[in-house]
Image (cartoon, rainbow, N blue to C red; front, side):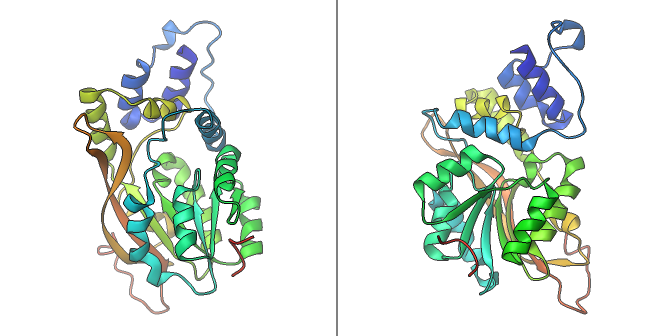
Length: 294
């Protein structure tokens, strides 16, 4: 347990440690470490390994994933907001698809859809439930793999639901570079993200009602909850190259329920970012069939 807490404390930045500390019993001072515990700092957490740990455990878990809500509360709400911006010749890549719950819904309504996840276990689960849609393992920090996918597919449209907040701020520019590679000159990004206050909201729920096992599994795998400022995605992609096509408030529903049975929803936002038209004025204040079917 001490090694687990040390690992989570190393991966989760101070602003997002409160929930992890409450669920896992709190990070221990270095003076309390057992000799076998290791606290070596690394330049970057192995995000792919964390998600592989999570989804491997999920294969044998009885309870659903914390965010694996039915499409009617997720992609079915999002799709009408961004469908008009999808290119007729481009693939829609569900990035961070997990077990494919949302990908399957998108594929039923669009047809040119592919799912990608950093975890091979997640891709296995998705493919087992939907053998007609292509799913692939993709580490967004593996630049050659990202470039190879773009070479194969050309520009793609991206659907990315609650992925960016799991990336530490100092690693987001590298993640955004891979997004730009996949989008190319024509692709659009449909993004749903938790706002920065969402972690505190979840922390308060844990304090009042206790942590669901599904949240403990997330933290135990070294994955942190967090939030992303509404204008950060545009700033990361580059306001000189991308612009906001649509935006609205949103809510990320969890499988976690209140004692009265109502579903927990975390505050979030929805935005669509697309390539800026030539000559379009940059207003930083206001900007705050080659795939899918086998």
